[in-house]
Length: 150
Image (cartoon, rainbow, N blue to C red; front, side, top):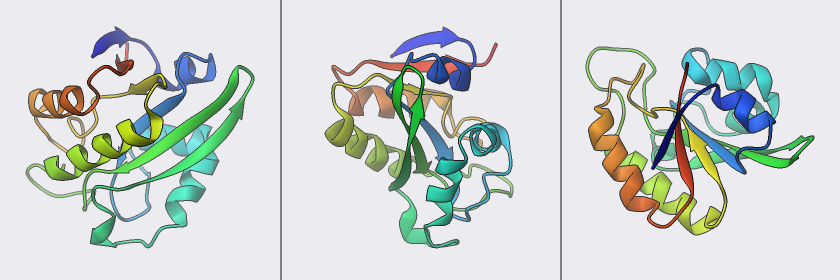
């Protein structure tokens, strides 16, 4: 895992990544954190989220996606369903869901440059050390970058 400081969305728009991944809940809200920024900058990603069934627990471990045409080329935005609820006490991220998603992303997007924030470790309250190990384990030999907001 490469780690850099910056703005994930800006770096994606500049062509630094072929896909960006962010964690979502299963209720089609995208109303806080980086999901809200993605909803604003990439409305197609929110439309992809809205095309799924709100509140469907079976979305955990899956993702929806949108392909965005940017000046440098196509960019995939991955809405990774890593948590069921979007509020409440305790840890909301589902570590098994994170694992399933990154295994699927490796299969579908191997060879592409992937960027992401600390998925599941912000508003979802997850332990970044656990999530980091999951991502590194699933994306062996892939070019993938954690972007921490400056």
